[in-house]
Image (cartoon, rainbow, N blue to C red; front, side, top):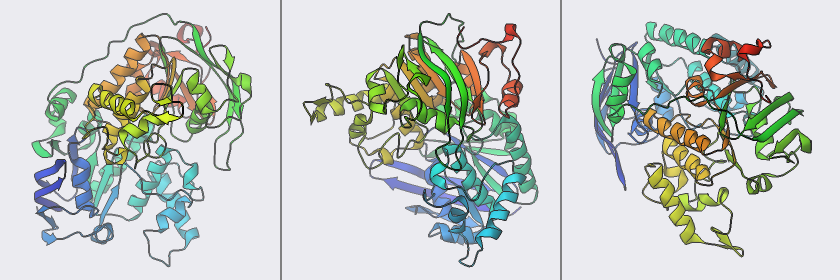
Length: 510
């Protein structure tokens, strides 16, 4: 069978690293082919070369048996290559339909395009509103826009980077059915995911990368999650042992938190009540766009519209306080958006310390202590094994997973009393994810109270002591992790919950 895509000896060098070192790759028509590797292994660079957004220093690219020079993404799209990037390329001030129209012919009619978007979104189980402005979307909803934009092109090769982080378990299976149907019709799929069980369930072939080189090719259906992990990082990720514990003092209380949506496409919060105790992790599950963004803004202080008593931090009403005052009282926060909110792309890692560490050790009498920033950044890089040239590297130069490790590390190093974390391991490889989760658990064991908002159910089941679900701006009862099941939480994510029997419920303020 002729190959759809062949890469031969692809090499890409940057001043401090060889991102791709003589990569060979063959993808057949109708093949679902996984690219597996830890953060910084060179996967994203290779995908950008295929899509024409990065030019290789050496090597050859063959498309349907013919050698091609893909100079830019427009040429890639003409060939029939579509890609969903991990970091999105959307304009905040435009609507979903307007963003998608940018890659289409000038005579495209927006009303007709909106109907196509709605039809495609329904077909693939993705909830999307074409008239909604991008700046009102969560990270997960932005990912849906990118997926639908790619699918509208009816590509011969579809590159997907972490596509299931926005979906319920039920919707994941529906997407897999669609991808299998696409493959049966001859579309080739390059699938990048750190969810090893997904790769084993979906993909026909797997190419493993480490340090910019191909280190193995296998049939993932014949492998275990452990064997794939060993191929990728050289070892099994450390397991986190679940230990039942008595909760400590009440650190954070949400008391009938209700907020009208701040924009027409937002989600109103309705009567959310929850107590968070020292020494516990409460996991918040839910499909993106169901109020997580609004809840995080209310908790962090970005949205201070709540009544003061609706949010109580260690017996002090903080609902009207801004983010800086909340940080001074021991609240830490990791936003879901790495670039733009979690870090300033063009500033160095050392300078980005100032986003959360503004205290006498870093700022004295109005003067920035650059040496202290440098030392703290270096300690985070070392402790969290961040792949970066050093504290002076810009945040935007890091891979997504390494930047996530740095941002989480920056907050952990503050030793917060309460830590709010959004999507802690989104797009992070299995080894780095295990490290981040272990750090969060260690913080819990040291007495911190953590609220973790994640769309990764496996992650929440691994680290949480209790689970709640947010759906349509409402919060479910809390349930002990040991009493919860994936099916139950998946059902609750659709807003279908009833008050559990007392024996199965761990009420938040018990």
